[in-house]
Length: 311
Image (cartoon, rainbow, N blue to C red):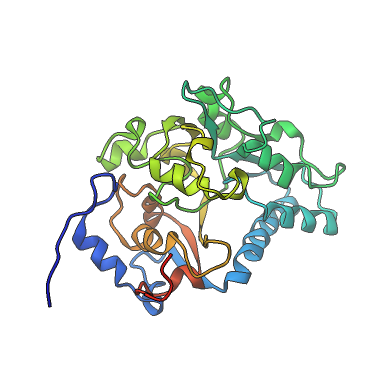
């Protein structure tokens, strides 16, 4: 048998061949095993992942309401599952004046100007459309409590979360690079391989990875057409410090290409959950924290060739 050995492209953020080979070999039957008991991995049927996400968020809203407490979320966007949360709220007539939510990121132009809440491809726009505006008006939290990044509030974003009482829950899921929010492993703005300084970093404007441009060009909001030029070049994002400070975290690994077996998350999910904790894979910091990691059956499938599939 002829061997052909090569190194990953210099553009790939994480290039440790031994680690990559190890995580590629993690089978479906072993994917939930982890040394940290506070890092709980569960595989769910693809059809259940979205509903269970919405149920988790709704349950936290209800429990906080019953306890007479505020609930503060850090939310990824765009996420149509928030409409499920709103439907549950409306059906059960839950008053949500105790709910606060902060978008974890938002697009920005080449000069760092952050997209306005009225931009239809924006994350704040999506959070309002799918969550705030979908809740019946008499049950909605005040709009001032559902917060997205703006050019004006960027420098105060971390303190705004703290002033709200601190995040009780941070929902996330890795991008193709392993980014968390838009904490990119290859952006100059998060330019360190030293874990401790990385963990202390807060919100900032970042340069998006070319891999993120490619990933997001396949999203419905950008026409699902590979239009790299349509995805903005920069973004505002929370930092690792805000993720770490949250009371709890829930990761979701469930993205596939229009419900097919093809998913770019199959490898990065394994690297996030079972690789080293490193700034080169930002979402990996959750391994050391109290976190629920939910993996769809499609993403959990063994990584094996399928020569009949092709593209």
